[in-house]
Length: 123
Image (cartoon, rainbow, N blue to C red; front, side):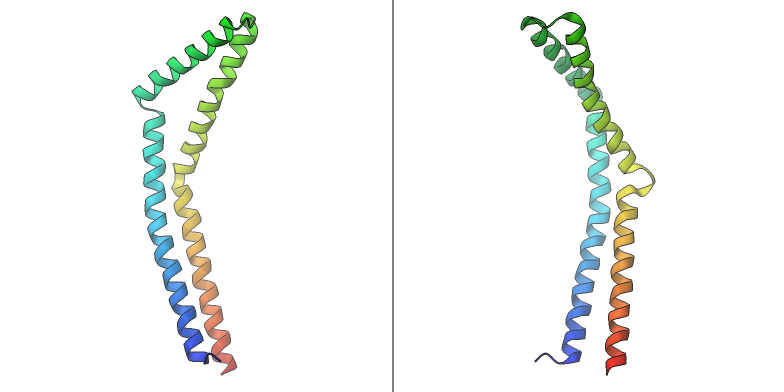
């Protein structure tokens, strides 16, 4: 049977490990999102999206698709890229991931403190 002090130590070590992981993630994820946003909205990305849309439209036309349908499908195709970009921008604003991870970290701290209080009360 594990003694209470060993259990408390393990619980504290687990909480510390979670805190370290969340700290690392909270710095890495925003940088990753910034990098993705930069690549999605770069000049080269714009050129690539334009070429992709043109190739998509051309393929639709060559397969016999009517003009109005090909245009609509191409607009929808490009809308996917635009929506993805909007989602990434929103995630990067106002500390999106930071706020979430900070909230998780606070919750972990709160629960760990509560566990310690309960264990001390039981002793």
